[in-house]
Length: 82
Image 1: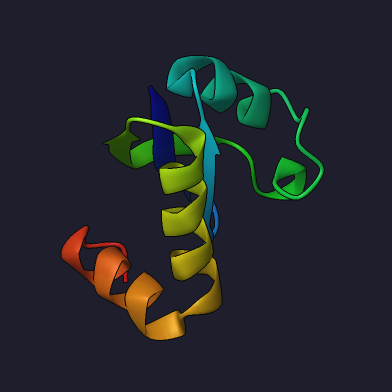
Image 2: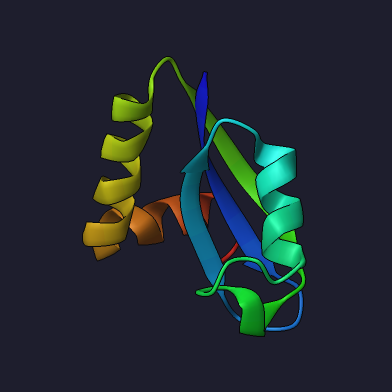
């Protein structure tokens, strides 16, 4: 299984969307500063996950959210993050 995940920065108005096979491990990597794009906005909490059968489907959803502001806004609003 693969997961799309949404992280929320505790101290900043930032969110991050990614995919992984192990959500808890990936969250630890983000919070330890091992991910260049998120290290300056640590710490993060897990705000949302979606489960997919394969990486292709998870990646497709990730790209939709990253490329379409309206799709991302709709998801964040439904999560109470906007």
